[in-house]
Each structure stands twice: as C-alpha cells, then as structure tokens.
Length: 238
Length: 204
Image (cartoon, rainbow over all chains, first blue to last red; front, side, top):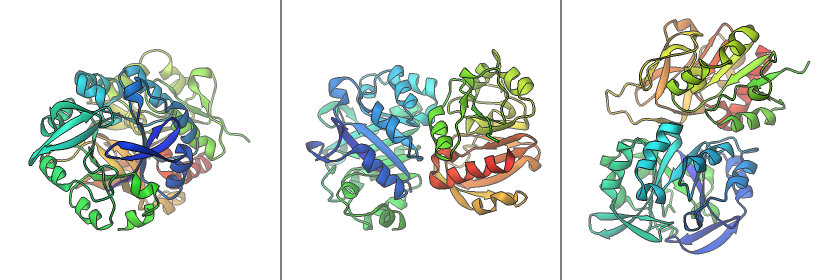
C-alpha cells in the first residue's frame, strides 16, 4: 500500500474543505510537501482546486520549486485540458498528471494523452457522489458539478482508454475525517484492473487493514495529515 | 578531477527530476542538447514513454553517433525506458529496434494470471552479490512504474531481480559499460540518491 499525501491548492495556499466546500487555508505547499517527504511519504499529489473553474493550472512554480528538494513521485492535477498542459506539468518536474473534468467532457483526450506520454503518466481523477443505494455519480469541477456519468460506467471507460492509475474520491466523505467510503469501493473494485488510489475521509488506523485487503490499492490522505492527527510513520507502520 | 556527466534529453521523460537528483548529490550534469559534440565520463538515458517512439527518435539523427562513436568508451546508465532501450528489440506497439547493448528483448509483463498493470510503487530489489559496493542496497525498496520489462538473454547481465504479483523479473543490469535500472533511483528518496552516488563513485 502506497501512502500518498494530497495537497489541494488555491491561490498558493494548501486548503482543505469538507465535501470540497468551505475551503480553509492550512499551510504553504512547498513547506508541507517537504515535511511529508522528510517523513518518508511514498508519493505526493498536488491538485489545483480552482484551475478547472478558471481554465488554467497555476501550480508550475510550486512544482518547479518543490521538485528541487523532493525525490519521490509527484502527480499534478487540476484544469488539465491539453497536451500542452501536460507537457508543462512534466516540464516543471512532475512525474504524472491527474485528469478529471476535461476527461469527462472529452473522453478521447485520455487516449490522446496516453498515446503521447505513455499510460503510466496519465492518471484519471474521479470524484463520485452517492445518488442512491447502489449508485454513484461522477462529479467534475472539484466536486461542484454533476456529469451525469455513472461511476461504474466511467471506470470501465477510462480503462478502455488505457489510463495508468485511477484516483477515486468520495465527495460524500471528503474532508469529514469520519471514515472512507468502503461501500463505494466494494461496489466498483471488481471493475478496476489498474492501480487504484482511494481518497476521501481517511481518519483511523483501523481502516488500513481494510485497505490492505485489496491488491494494488493505495491510500490518499489530506486532512488527517494536514491537521497532524496521524503521522506518516504511524500510517505506514499500521 | 571533476567528472563530466551528461543527461541525454531526447524528448521523452522527466529530465528535470534526474537533473535535480544529481544536483542534490553534488554533480552538475550537462544536457546533451546543449553539448552535442562533447566527450563525457557518464551518460544517463532517462525516459518515460513508449519504446517504439524512443526507438524512432534515437535511430534518427545524431544520437547513435554520440553514444556509440563519440562516447564509445563512456559509461551509459539507462533508467526505466532508458534501460529497456538497451535491448536488441522491443515489442511495445509493434516490433522496433533497441540500442542493442544487451542481448535480449523488452516485452510486456505477461498478463496470464490477472496482473494489475502498470506495476507501480516501492518494490524490493535483490542485488547480485558480485558487486560489493551495492551490498548495502540489497533488499531495499526503490520506486517502480512500468508495464514492460527487459529480459536479458545472458543471465550474467542481470544485476538484480524484483518480484511483484508473483512475477520475478530483471530490475537492473550491469554489463561492460552499460548500467541500467528499471526502477527510478531519482524518485526513491534518500536511498535512491545514495544508490546514484555509489554508482558514480565506483564507476568513474
């Protein structure tokens, strides 16, 4: 199980909300990323929280600065909508990119990105919200807008287009620190044959055992690390 | 004497990570694109992307002359796709030619028993005991991300093996002037930087 720190960024600050809303500043991105790296985090994901809304990712400087001193894999997401955007992310020192909103609007873009940069560089970021007992809907624009896409349909589609990894975040659990959406995971995991990064709501070490049951499932954490509720070591040694 | 290290920036992969990593351990690498007619002590071939695309680039233009004529005695260190390219041939998106430094093939990790590809994450590396200065790295974890592997024909060329999801494969090679790692030492934290340092110190 890889333990991944997720830093959501708005206006040069790491922010954190609940269900992607009510965003609060929690620190400086480079400082926090360095801290997690020194604590031996496995990977870091930077997401520009407002990029899709404004149509551009503003993390290039942060990536460029942080990769001078951080030597673990770095993924960048938020507002990626062209081959040129991906090129700029990788050129700043990122290893992988995570695409969400634009992929839901233009699934063919996944294919194009994979063909240009190789499958392992292209991650699909999925935000899903429960709409009834056994059904989850895919959201875009940082959990703000419905896409009409069914989660199960979408995970099959992005794999058909050969994405490298999938990041799956529960919009319902995100930021609450009340536990992860294992119901959603159970519902979709059989359809996934890619490394999966599970995100949203992690709070307790007792959840780790559950996560380790699945092969190639990784854990993405924000609040619980940002608020110092648990350390990287505690999580990795659980 | 100051050693001259070059990174072959041929258009694929994250050149900056490797550049920063070498900087961190006190080296100042040169980029090929700005120093095409120089002779170096060590040349890194990085790379993330597809074998056939890299093959196409390296077999067009001046790269082969740089690697095989101008720097014919230089140590060549391939990382990930950079190492896979050492093979005689690759099968990603159809057959294409490798650099032919290592007899063998770069092939897809076989998907017989429901493997989850790509292989991603920190995996244990078991080093061949022959190389004394690498003994401290035996059974430590390095970062991997790949769906293809280089299978050398000659087992003498294998420097380490790694096992993931029940598949055991060659995770680094060392043969004549060629060193290659399937893993990314530049992305494996402190241990990765120490590994790079050990290779540089003991080969230059």
